[in-house]
Length: 57
Image (cartoon, rainbow, N blue to C red; front, side, top):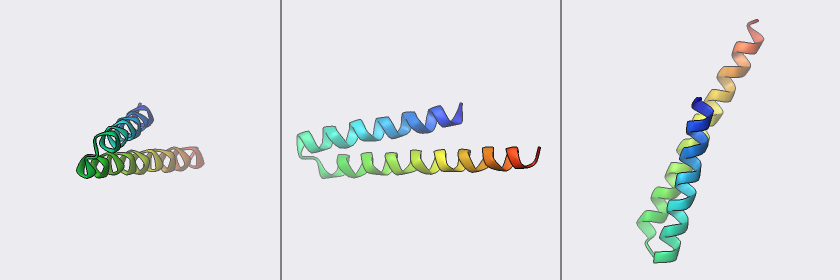
């Protein structure tokens, strides 16, 4: 479930960045990139947790 939320955050960030580019809004572009990076970090943490869980079995 957490991976899905991370992917959704990445998608939302991509849409925001694209909208910012279309409107010439640098702030919105930056916010979109930030959301994408946050989503990627969350996904990486979830992947690491899954690997750790699998190794502990």
